[in-house]
Length: 104
Length: 104
DNA sequence: TGAAAATATGAATACTTGTTCATGTATGAA
DNA sequence: TTCATACATGAACAAGTATTCATATTTTCA
Image: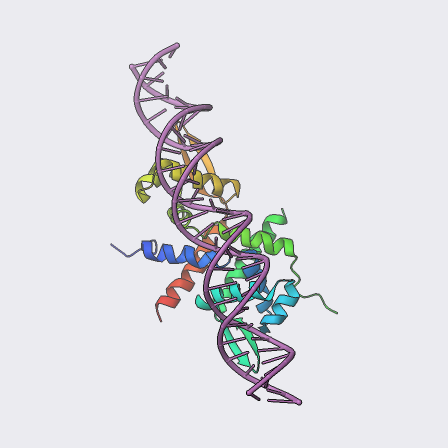
């Protein structure tokens, strides 16, 4: 019997749901959205999104721990950017769905 | 100045995060995964996933309300299937990311 | 070394959400 | 109509999580 692509372990399915969770929060989605345009510092994020700095830092920690974003220090500032090209792809795939739905 | 594709309203970003939330739960991901192979009844889902029927029904309600799945009645049974071709696409896009990460 | 700027972190709180358990509704068969 | 099957739903509880507020780090500059 040929192997089928439907053979996905429960572990992978669990990781998959954990992965999507990171996109399932407005604050994180807005942060990710900003980073689609490139590197950005913590303060810049807070200003552009009108969020407290601690809120941004907390969410960045979650994204950093999950390897969705990566930091780069430059003096006192820390610039964050998307760590993986897939992140933008998934964002846009979801966005396409939303816009497609609204367009009907 | 030319319009840029980065012009996404906060409303859309909110909807986007709400949309990803549906994928951010193990039970729902497992249900969606089953439906990638086609229509399936509530009982069948519960059996295959070793879940209580009420758990499945509750999650199906969430997915149905969000128009991610659609029901089809046949006698006493109700068969559910994915409502939108995007659902499978998003699932697979995320899956690719997970498998790619594990492969390294 | 001392102060300011930029970011991170810890604890507490409030809110959201998934599961459990009991019950309700709908359909088909006798 | 009565019973059994298949599914849905409501309330309560438990667990997870985002935000707030205060404080701690780290770095630069005087």
